[in-house]
Length: 93
Image: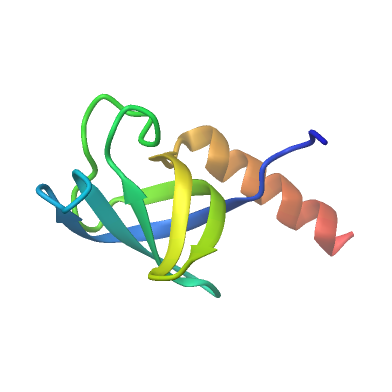
């Protein structure tokens, strides 16, 4: 298999510091809806947790009984913005 992971951008809506299975966050992702992601070291790749309103990039998103779950997450970076702009320009040609 291989190839690039499909990435989704979202806005963090809330942080749950003491969830049943550990800390997690909920983000609103356009065209997908609410996506949860764990804030442990295996899923969240940043040193500090996001705040509500933070823009995040989520990948390895899958449907679970309780809704959408991302298995990988990080903050949006300037390089993400440049990549998105480049893709838009290529699509316009």
